[in-house]
Image (tube, rainbow, N blue to C red; front, side):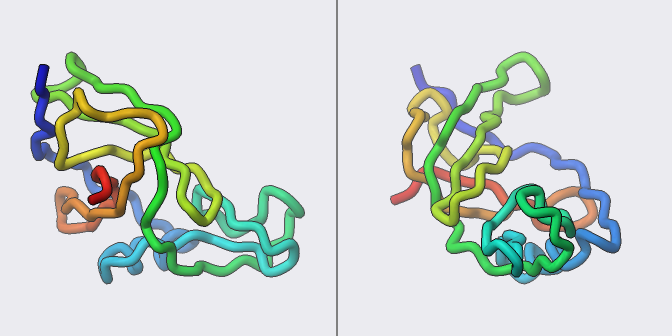
Length: 134
């Protein structure tokens, strides 16, 4: 069976002062991941306080945008078109919830390599998503 991912409407993100730099990065075509300047660990989701050592000395660093599918599900009855929700483990070490796009949804597999793509949300904000690599 083949179920091709289809484009759909994506709601615009809510931009707050503590995530504005992240959304500015996506507008420039870059995925930013917060890193702690005290313990050195990256963390996801982008928040100002490190969840490991509680330091507020954190900074965004660019991600290579490559990783592997940790887990996924294909949602077929939630909206007008099927789509894939997934946890992607980035090569930088963080795991993020995202969508897998531009592929045959029935061919997805845990451990499959993926790469970053951006999709426009309502209002023009760019959302980081992933597609199968290669």
